[in-house]
Amino acid sequence: MTNDNIQYFVKESLFEQALVDLLPHHGWEKEVLVQPTEEDLIQNWAKILFDNNRDINKLGNYPLTASEMRQIIDQVNLCDSRRNFIPCDDGRVYHLLS
Image (cartoon, rainbow, N blue to C red; front, side, top):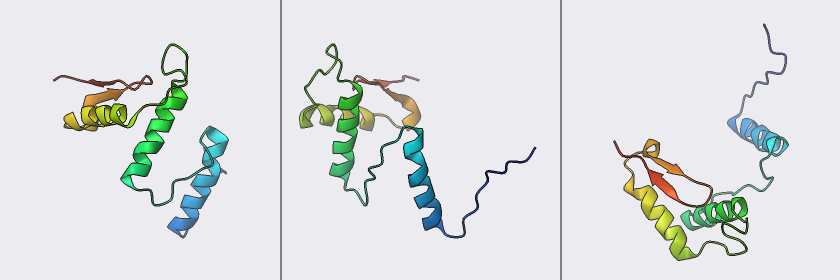
């Protein structure tokens, strides 16, 4: 069985651009963070958590504060491996015990 939709790239930059162009067709946002700082990434994650939890029984119209994001990051940092925690849509992070 062959796949006629295979595309080959000579330059990595062309592959990256093709991927960025493709992602919005599969539910990703068109906006891309270019050379983000750590603070940019934290703010983006906070925005994602807020957007995914705007339900009145969750965050409502109250975005996470810097202190709340710090608590989430602290919980993630307690884990010795990404496989040891489960981030939830409501912003809680569950640490898996061995």
